[in-house]
Length: 273
Image (cartoon, rainbow, N blue to C red; front, side):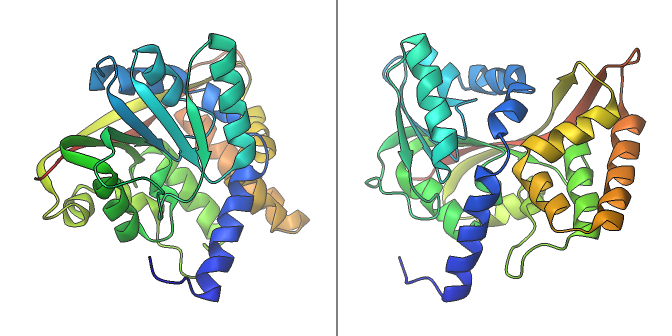
């Protein structure tokens, strides 16, 4: 790996601080059933070697380990890894959680049968480097499985609303490009023998109103927490209003609860020999 520029070091530090802010575990719980479905479709086999990249608190790691697979979870945020370790211990699961950078995975070439990531690796600042690491860590004939928010989906549109009020950091490409089929094909061009791209939905369920959901994200979802913190009182009010309108317009429930579906791109790539 080449030495990082001071600008990239600074960007990575900001990204780490963002994902450590709030309490992402509380957000992850709201779509845990969709994460389990993603893992189930992989049909992991006992003793299959699995790496969960940008694993957070273990939304994929935990159900993968339940299948009997040998699983390692990797993330940059130590507080999220601690939650993952506690969850694994509570279930009696033997999972290793490692703190490291998805753009510089400290694992030997071809170490894993399946390398997976859900709404995680898409947020790294150098997507081509990340794609290369996902492929490198996977054995020839093994699988790279990703779940990436699409630009047109609910969460993708939420990111765009936030971006209107708080522009992305310099040098940070849009994570939503990982939800564009043509871009994904480019990033795995030459390294995937097969590439299956499927648009799917994940459901968020909250036992409170859309306005309260926005406050929940402001308190617990790192990117939203940081966005609000970058604005003055007037800016925060404007962002809050747009986000409340967004959640309300897409809410499929009534009676004071919120149910919203968001589209993501499921990527399953078979590593070429």
